[in-house]
Amino acid sequence: MRALLRLTSAETTMFLREPLSVIFAVALPPVLLIVFGVIPSFNEPDPDLGGVRIIDLYLPIIIAMAIAMVALANLPQHLATYREKGVLRRMRTTPITPTVLLGAHLLMCVLVTAITSLAVLTLGALAFDVALPQNLLGYLLAFALTALATLSVGLLAASWAPGGTSASAIGLVSLFPLLFFAGLWVPRVSMSEVLRTISDLTPLGAGVQALDDAAAGGWPQLVHLAVLVAWTIVAGGLAARTFRWE
Image 1 (cartoon, rainbow, N blue to C red):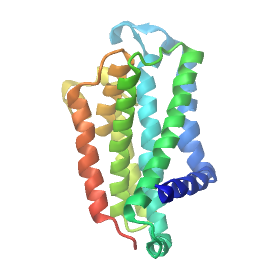
Image 2: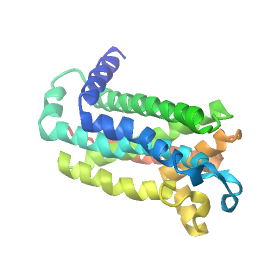
Image 3: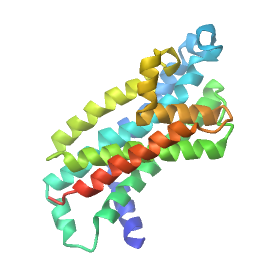
């Protein structure tokens, strides 16, 4: 546990020293919320959306995007670059195990996304009168499972990629379709039945619906929780089995 915490602290410090990582993973989601929030029509109830404001609809989507930016744009490139530069090979000679290494990166990513999501929720409530989650326990469960599922996909990309450039490419190729099915460009309620079914089977689509259900005061649906757990087990298990030090 001590090694895990010390490595997590070191990785978090290195993450904060990279301006591009901080801009895209920490600053971009709140900025996007502000951009959406200042659009007048986004703050008016939309009859086509059942009287829901678009800004309310987009808040869980932006939180899902905050998770995805860290999991798919930062984590794979970071770990694969470590392997490419021989950092992982040198770590292999230390008592650090793959479990500690991957666990430290997962913990660091969860902390970063949790802080960013908290900032988004606070900004939404104070600046745009977006209601805070009504079922806090359900919301935390949905957030944790969404983060684990998406980070597992990022770890799998890092395990398969031969270098930092290819890992970044795999992460980005995965990022944009998952953001589409999360509803970033077309809200889930406006999707066709087929697209919504596909969205339900993706980690971000299931995550957004689970966050939305908990925010409204209910519990996330079992089907969405099951999808998130399945992604975590399958992608995380494959990442652990195919992890390479060099």
